[in-house]
Image (cartoon, rainbow, N blue to C red; front, side):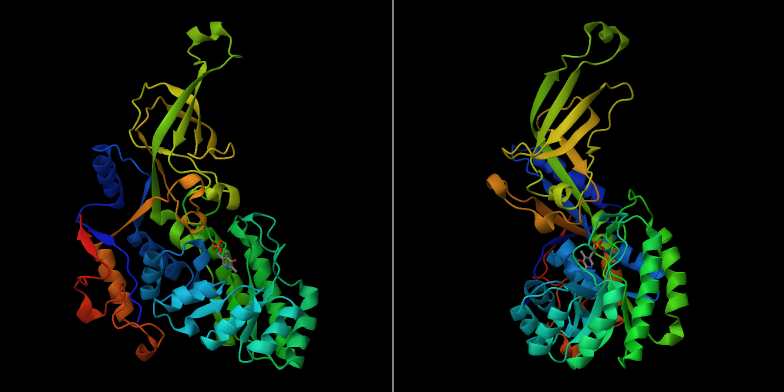
Length: 456
Ligand SMILES: *Cc1c(COP(=O)(O)O)cnc(C)c1O
């Protein structure tokens, strides 16, 4: 048995995650030790889950672990009964260590190492994606009771992060792949796609769902029992995205009803990553150094017109080798929120913001307007839960920020309620005695040891 451990704190009534940010800043400001830190509101993950259920009632989410693999997030989602999209042996291990039944895992990597396919096989993970003949041959050799899902390419030209250049079979290749699967005696149960991460175009979903229907029909003709549609990820995770979640789902739902009506008996799943975690995390960084640049090219006589001929460089204690790797890998544009509200007449300066490492590439913001701040002041970055901590390094010896997990008591109780109402999994298949975040009703009391709850 493996009891996952993570520390979290209950929010006192009337307090929000924002108040905890403030409190941590105050505590930290008493000392010289002003390390960057995160506050993660697990209640926000719950909110997203409820929003998902409301907007996509026919679609079961399988959270994409790569987006943020923190125990706290995974435990919360496991308690809420989501499935998981794992791409590797280690992700499968991690999710199974939380007591998640293998039926709630899809191994959604179309190009897998043979030894890892074997691992899935011996650990009961059957659902897996493929998009090539070679993959079918590997699976036929070492996982003959796999339930295969054919990943098709999509038009992801309007996504922030494209995926269909690397993954997904073209429609014209699908018949051949299905015939090959038949020949090898493999079981194909459905179709998956991913419209690209940070999708800004709901039409891409509509087209992909229609394409999936074509491939379903090919599979049915060949005698496969096609009963799973996986609409992938790509859903926005914060309100500052170019498209609202509900604008996308307003297109998805009618497309599902048209091509995969309820009476078709097809089970529909998705693999949201960003959607669940982006807005739960706020990163708080400290200004560790500052430079003032005098602009040569601003003519001196402009000064009396109020144009300020200085620009500022701020250096903070997390950067692109840490949390802000999302700028390089996830094409993110991160802008800070001020900790101290500027006065209405406060002068603003052209500023750039840099990470702490010695690499010139380590720049967080090329240009933005900020007031004159000092070494020791704080800056906030919101919506930092997706593709941040998951890929950060300690390059140059800069440590990853601590993460303070918080949840309100009503949110915690709501999670417990959903858990108690039952997962689609028989209880005996759960390997945990009392999953840390999955307290049953009798266990609504906070477990004294794991996880440790500190009331703040
Ligand atoms: C990364 C990934 C996801 C998650 O994508 P989001 O855009 O974060 O929702 C889902 N499925 C697969 C196969 C992925 O590679």
